[in-house]
Image (cartoon, rainbow, N blue to C red; front, side, top):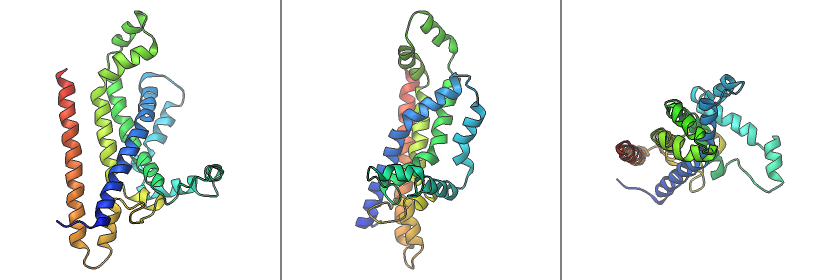
Length: 225
């Protein structure tokens, strides 16, 4: 298996995008999951539908909607332009696309974990005088730690394989926004690129397998406690 410098750069960018998307999305995903699982806010069904929409929409459609949202003519694009921040066709766009597409998987996993917690533990903690933050960090998060881990693993793996929304929002520029899926797509579009595409496919499989193994190993440690 031979990898070119561009391939190595694509692998590096994929890991960077997946890690950034996961780290940025995790606290937001937990907050939204907590809102859905532990509160009775109005409009919960609509909020849940909006969050899960990227799961059922074609990724290209999600990418196009993000393109409209962050385009130079949108209010967000015009607002960011005042600070000389450009999103479209940059690595930031790849992170945003991966975050949006993987967000529902993260929220669903954490929500299932939160809903499985026996609420009596939380009520007992509050009854004994613990503040909300203390209860959150000493009771709620530890009890749903495995669900958080599962959601994080899914989010990272989904970000590694994201293609449709990324190519629309970030483009396919080697060394700038080209991740592993985009590099594979480029190789399959040119004559003689099959072997190079296969090499990157093997790398992608290996990375995904390592993520699963890591998640399983940590999960076993958490289950022993």
